[in-house]
Length: 235
Image 1 (cartoon, rainbow, N blue to C red):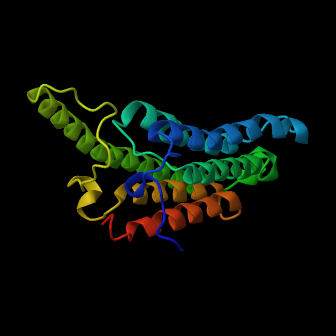
Image 2 (image 1 turned 90 degrees about the vertical axis):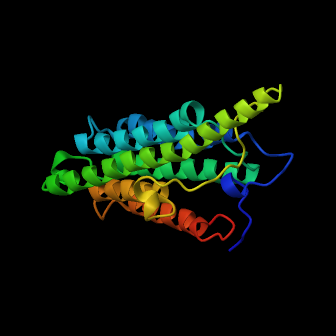
């Protein structure tokens, strides 16, 4: 609908921009916080003594993903991140609150609430787990390929600065984008996107067709990421 997307590769100069690492961590964290809040409060409100193990399994998977995506990746692993416009920050923050609340509400009392509700789902759960972890591991692997490019560029920038008797720029390298040649980068332009789709499809498979929040999440992931793949200035 619009070519304006002020974040990441297509970020724009603005006095309102927020530093990428901190913006990313803050806007992504509400998802798993909202989900865990639902898991801890709704059962009490609904008078449920305990939730099925499968409900907690899905909650843990969601939390593990976002501990990596929201905190570990931006604050520990990423050498640098482009600034994020407040519009993108606010949109992502709101989405995370809604998404975490919807999935958390489903798992915490408005979806399956007894072990009997999960009867006969063992094979489906195993397939979903395999898809989820294949996507999760692939996501981390391809993310690290991209990080390595920035690490190498930062080291090169530091060497050049030292040779010229100057100090290297603080905060790493801004807006350096190259296509790695490892893993699925040889056949797919955005394998980290693709792997994340596989991850959340696996999550949905575990929950089953009736898990509407997980299904909507997969559709949201694909519809928000896919248009960026076809942006000519990125390709």
